[in-house]
Length: 217
Image (cartoon, rainbow, N blue to C red):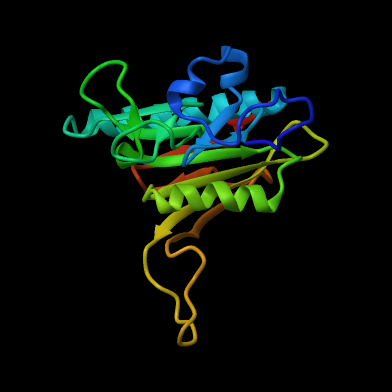
C-alpha cells in the first residue's frame, strides 16, 4: 500500500467495476474502488515486492502444514489479490499486499471478505498514518479477523517490524452520547522486531512460525 503520485490520468471520482474493466490494465491495476470511489495506489519499490512475496511464501508453507494435520481445513495464501467487501457486486474492494482465505470450492472465483481470514500490508517508507488507518478501517468494517502490518527500514533493505492485529468487535466505554468513529477495530496482539532474535510466531488463524532468516533480502 503506497501513496498516490502525481501524473495519474484524469478519471471520474466514482466508477463501477464494469467501467474500471474497460480501462487499460496498467491503469486499472493501480486503482481500488472504495464503495465506488476511485482510490489510486501504486506498487512499492523492489524491496516491497520481495518481502511481500517471501512472507506470502512462508505463510503458505505454514498453511500447508496446518492442512496436512487436518484435511478438513483448507487455506489459500496469496498476494495482491482483490478482496470484494460486499456479498454481491464488485465495485467495493481492496487489494491487500498478502492475504489468506478459505478455499472457494472452485477455480477463478472472487474472493469475498467473508472468505478472508488474514490480510496484510507491507508499508513502504512513504506511507502515511492516515492512509494506513483508512485501509485498516476498511478491513475491520468488513469483518476480516486478522490484519498484519510489515514495516520496512527506510534506508536499508530489511524488514524492521512485523505486527499482528486481531479484530475487536467490543465497544469502548465512552461518555454518554459519544460513539467511536470506527465501531470495530483491530487490537495489537503480536509484535516482532527484526533484531536477530526470535522468529515470528502466532497461533492464529493457524500456527504460523516464520524465521527471520527466511525473510532476509
